[in-house]
Length: 139
Image 1: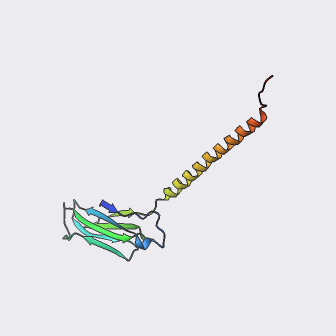
Image 2 (image 1 turned 90 degrees about the vertical axis):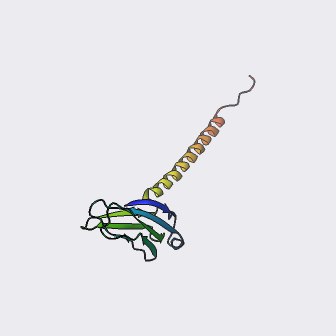
Image 3 (image 1 turned 45 degrees about the vertical axis):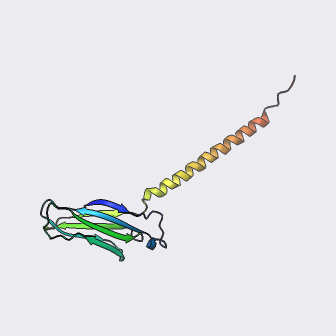
């Protein structure tokens, strides 16, 4: 299975706005051995569109294209493909926010706060030093 194109983005979508945001994934399937038997999406979504190029079971050495469109309430979908003798493969597409993204944002915010703290500390030290140095005047 190969993802050939993808449109739409579910990042930053919450449970209230997810139904209004959609994504589309196009995939391509082929089998070099015993021939394709079935191609189907596995998802918990109930509101989606799935289209597959017509093919006869046992099709070999030919690409079959499929398109899945769903809303961002279920941004993860698996595509199950099997051949005539029962071999199968799962292709997973997940458009939800990656878990590292939250840590990246948090790290960026903490980094900026640290820089601001360092600048404030430097300013305070400079002000303290100015007060301790007696003014230089005529002798």
